[in-house]
Length: 210
Image 1: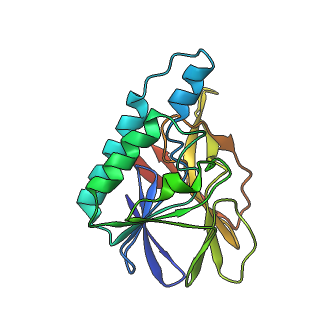
Image 2 (image 1 turned 180 degrees about the vertical axis):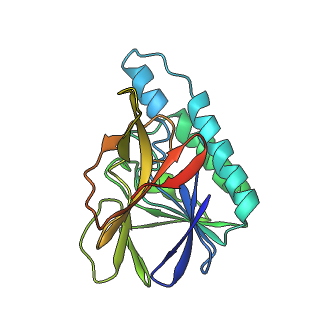
Image 3 (image 1 turned 135 degrees about the horizontal axis):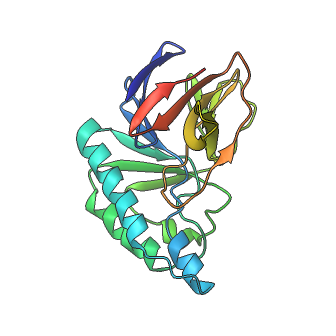
């Protein structure tokens, strides 16, 4: 975990690929892609739902540790059409009835409206909590935009020409991008400017590299 003081706010960048915003007691997560394993199985590719169970367990531990007042999902909470993965997650949400959740809809959040009818879950297109604007896809805003969607990563190179791609937190001039929280998501290499701030996640640590 690393404390990032930004726009007079305290953001804890967590190695589990989530942000805890101290002043608002918010836990912010992007791109779980729950149900993706079931989507692959429909295509004949055997992938276990255990990978999603691990993500939910990690989220549970973060809630217990940081005790947020609300959890914000920055889109792509669920990967595709309704399947058993969503039912498992819905039961987990209902077990956290004392905690509020908000979902900022992403391009993969294509479930029917009735599937989101859960008492402690609110669904929105975007969310403004000054000084931040929360969306799924990065966009221009009068507030500082925080989004997901990209699954940002950078390539680290070693002395012997070996290299590894690792997920990262990206803070640019007007936008920040969170790494994908889900373990079954993949990453996309991003270009970095000298003025950007980048924090990589490696060996369960968050390290600033730019």
